Image (cartoon, rainbow, N blue to C red; front, side):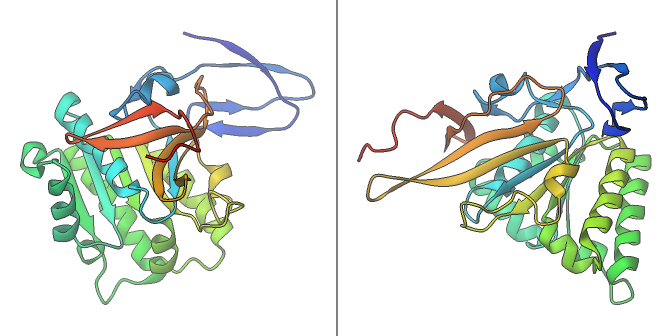
Length: 269
């Protein structure tokens, strides 16, 4: 068992693996989680200590067009294909047919992961009788029932703004706190898509979701020269992980994601 000495002065909940309860100046032992979920972004996993610690709740944040949905589905798809892990992708914005069509266009054939990766859309969960807080309770019940019956390793929720609207959050900061706690109790790896504005000072989460999460992956569009745009990705935070804080150029070709080091911000191609 690994041990790491950390000093804290206030009671702190760090993540689903760590509880600190202590007095003034007391040092506590922390055991780092060792099992990790690969992102299957070639080159990126090496910069995040081999992957995302199993059981974490991770924000994938960015503006429109940064391939957040594709990145998270890619994680579910390739972990199912390579490791046999089971995942559910919850789409509160796109319907199932539209999302599958998009992923097929990227070379991800849903037939190859049938029984391992499922997509739920809004129509799969909500009926006329279930709205607001009641809808959220039904959603939680469905996820827990699915996990108990079929097993579940990973969950993607697309997206947090849509959840806030559909679930009728009245006090988002408090509602998100309890929602994140419920996610951790599931003991699965969760990816929550967060929409950001084009404002460079925009926060990763509108209601402290960035503080509640165990990790944050940020994807952005970067202007290169006068006419070219690059997608870039970085790990903003990942608890219990020795990760690079740098941005990397995000590429997609031959049905796979990969990163390269950023060479220049001024070259015209």
